[in-house]
Image 1: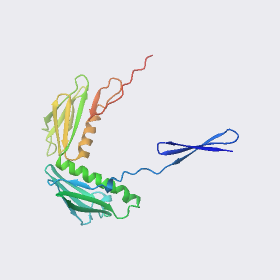
Image 2: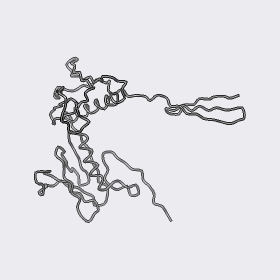
Image 3: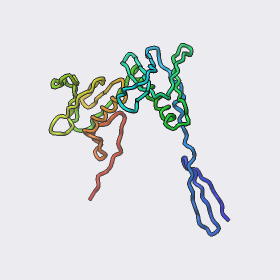
Image 4: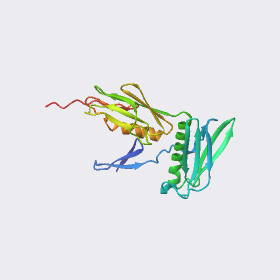
Length: 239
């Protein structure tokens, strides 16, 4: 004789079976994942943003994955983005009560690759629209005795970056990092850096490039913190 007592833990169903001789056996079964269905959500955009879809297939792509993709141009007051759109992704522009809407669909949602790119494409377009209309701002904090940063002219640059970020981070020399094109860098306080740009990927990549020079350490909680990043404090081991 046995009894089964099902218990749910997160997304897994734990079934406990008690046999006649008192042994307890457990079996696990995973329930279906809850999908976000973000790709199905209609994407609104303002009148200051212009989206132009070029259905011409890309035959000479920058990367092989973009072969036969189409091109979406997103233009706004803060710049322009060009996104490759997979050939199985369909874009439909609509007008509703004066608002511009974009609906994104795929040819066959049952195919895993198309289902994955459905939400990804929608997220990339949404990020680009926000970038060209509002922009992105990433603050960086320098925590440490004597840590400070300034923006200087890059006199050594030959047709490259016109400005560089100079930081004092406890080394015997200053750390200098060229500021990429398309990113505005300012230092409102000696220990605070503010990055601004219309491409969230480039802004965050540059932020974490700066962070690598002094990653936050848990004992004294010093280092370079990106955004609202925090780190749990650790106590030193006592002998």
